Length: 115
Image (cartoon, rainbow, N blue to C red):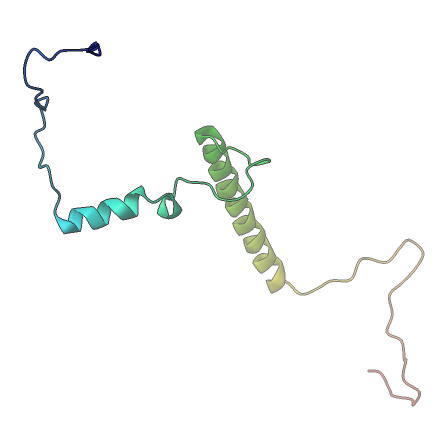
């Protein structure tokens, strides 16, 4: 008894033609570039570590952070200018309370004439 054949080829099998426009084989420098870019360990877009509580920074949030940073820098500059202005002035004592008068006082143990 002869085993039934499942399929009979009508013609010899042939490879399917490709519509490839680039070279079939790459130069060695291209291969080196591709191996570095295809390795996810060197890809800056890959986030490493725990991303459970990671906060996604949107473009609007980035713009808001930049605005707040520049606003904070302006406030710090104003504060620095105010401190420079106040540093140039001589320190003053507050005026005396009603019914009291400021006066020079001898605090040393030996007597010194105050003039």
